[in-house]
Length: 157
Image (cartoon, rainbow, N blue to C red; front, top):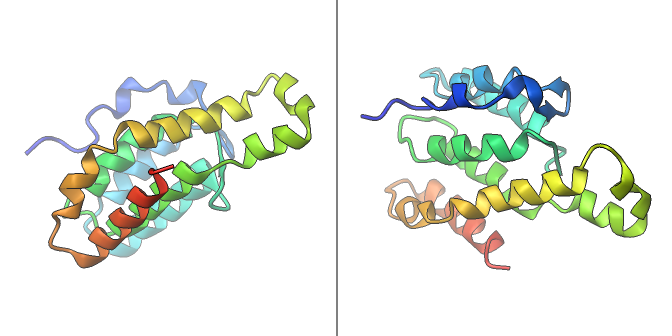
């Protein structure tokens, strides 16, 4: 079996920002999601969500880099919180907080932080992996299939 999350080291996490600052904790949180202990996995996902999709709709610079790993984890039957991962991917795919705010306050576009670009990159990262949906729809776990359908619906626009 392919080693889960083997490409984590290829991302310059120190150079990326999440909601807390440098995104250096993201690799350990992603790794913790693979824990056999369900409470540990779920707690790690909750903390990760706060860093990359705060409030369920505010993404940060590190979000796009994290998305491929979320797709990878969603495909692993041994991961206890697959449904929640798919829900997080759906939230990221629907995120338009910065884009909406920039429409009302165009000065936001002149900031050194490229919030709108980060948001678009995160949505694009979710869409880039949508080929995975067919595989997930064939899963025996009904909750995973339902969460996948909801995610697929969010990707149809």
